[in-house]
Image 1 (cartoon, rainbow, N blue to C red):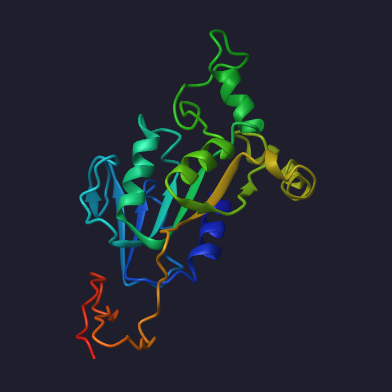
Image 2: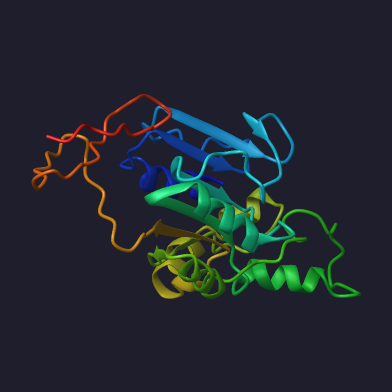
Length: 235
């Protein structure tokens, strides 16, 4: 999980706002490098800030600035509805980081072997082999339908799955070689998406607006962790 922690830290450090959300994998703090004042962990079970169904988040619409979604869509029964809920709670220009398992990798091949009626190697059909392993191409299609703008994904974990620390050490060279020669074949990926709303342009709290005669304007103001904007009076 070191790759996941580092990739998230690099991408959340410069994301600003009022409220951030990590959905799933509560054992890791993937928002630790971020400076948003209110950071919430959500999952269906476990020691989290909020325990709920991921397809029905008990959060106000357009109330979240950043969502980190590690290894959730691969295992949820309705991943598309999870994305719809995230789109609902994200503010315009809010960011979403998705981490998942890549089906076009040695990990994906091992999952396929493990799901055969008579697998070559007997392994328990549990995490992470019981997931769906959604491809980046499919996720891009879903996100674009939800009006997200998607960046190019990052890949990692090129070493094949094995339980021996000695073998992992011997195969560590694959991490460097894979990132250079077969970048799209990493066992895990991170995809960044930004929620876009047509006809809307966000302005920082310190920006000034000169309205036309008699026009009312909305002046954003910092109001703490709730992130509520207050309506200014017309000048």
